[in-house]
Image 1 (cartoon, rainbow, N blue to C red):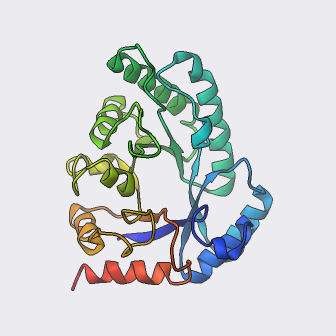
Image 2: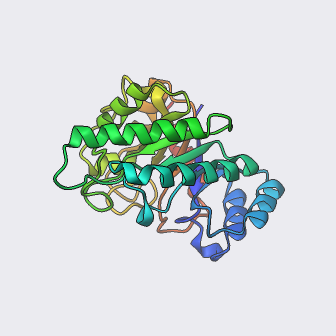
Length: 262
């Protein structure tokens, strides 16, 4: 069954800058799980305490900050990437986080793209081995080419899924971010329709604007119904800056989900 998590880097800003206050606000709104980006700038003991007190799961953290990501097309970056993933896996294990988000980086100029993607595969294999003993999986994310990743090495869902299938590692799966996929021009179900077993997590926000469901032009009842019919049974992470604050964010998302059966 689908449920919802929320990225507290973007939502619940009204609770203040404190990660603990944002976790509490998300829990008060009904969210059973939250997500963050960089863990290195967070007070981890405080975060662990509030997660326990509110009975909230921290679902995803990122191995790197997106502004300081390793370029996996370059083998010289691989050792640093593996180190960052391994460090993140230790923190994830301590906090009970099951999923670590990773990026492949950008296309390097004047080099064969197929060879660059092969280098990225090698980096992911090394990272997979490095965390094989930890209860975590790596989620490979594709970002949109319009804003965040105009030169992204993994340019769309199909490209990333093909790489992940070739890797054939149980702890490396796909983060399908529907917001990014829409901006990349991917129709509903494109790429993931026959690869759902490789999808480890889904995130979403409305388009345009990256705000809550219903503020843009997407039919989210149709989107959620497709996921249910396809057999997805996990969280949909709301990675959005809500225009109306976070208090009703979970309630409204659940109402959309309930509308899929009416």
